[in-house]
Length: 361
Image (cartoon, rainbow, N blue to C red; front, side, top):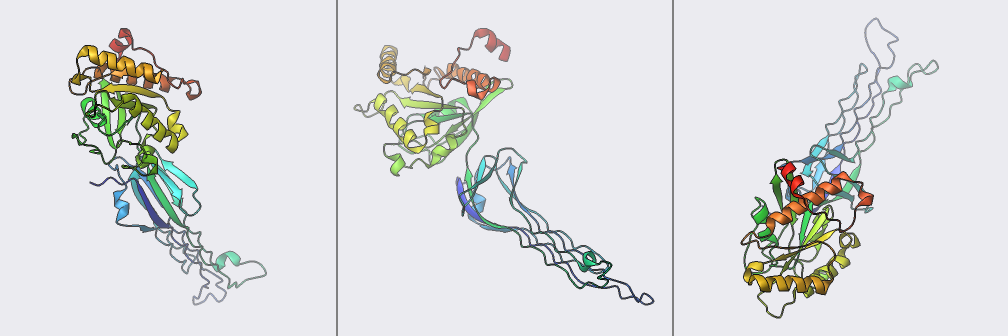
């Protein structure tokens, strides 16, 4: 299934039904009076979060959605039926924009949450409401109001606790497949990941977090090189970024420190918010060198970058370091959920003590 994370649609709420002017015309009731009923309200258009959806591809094939109009009023003071609402199911994490005014209408962040995006027209009223002591036979009635018509931009931002960053072939897809049940495409050529992938990492009973993998960034991505930076939007809701680095790339002239700086530069061009997010360094593919050489390369990279945040040494092939990494992430996320957001340290990290780990298990 193709991954689609941005679409434009048009929504039309229902028109309100008209009120009518009518009079009782029954035998032996010469002064029956007015009995025109009101119309029904037009139907609204809602977006609703759905658990089984993870893409907006359905909206690529149908772009116009209409709610039902309200029915007109009837004689004998009968009110017309209200129009049925139109409910469009979307993935959780969908942001809704008014395409004409560029105003953010809202977000769908929970399963079952409904967001009103177009309000139906108000009903018209019948001539019964215009009856008074001086107007015994009113012939006035009002038409129903039209419903709202809006052009919307739907933008999907995945809901994940942790996001993966790095150049193509840094090992991000291998990492998410090693620690979760996600099975993204893994190959020895660049841009094997063409769309974001989500995986759930289970650390212990009732202890898990969601991790997102996006396509790799290259130098000039902000100007459209490679797959661009459009997928960075999926990291905007994460609480922690993991910067994955290939410590022993095939190109011997490639410098891991330069790779880190390239990604940092593209992040800064896209959003200062992402630059300010907590970011940990994950040095990958240490199985390609002897232990002493791998240790020296990692120490050299940390020193050259003057890296102050936590740094981890892993191998997705052998599994070395993965347990320590996932436990540290779980502990960090638990700490962030337990304290006010304003008191968070941007690079806060606390070592997982054995007592806490035993308690989780």
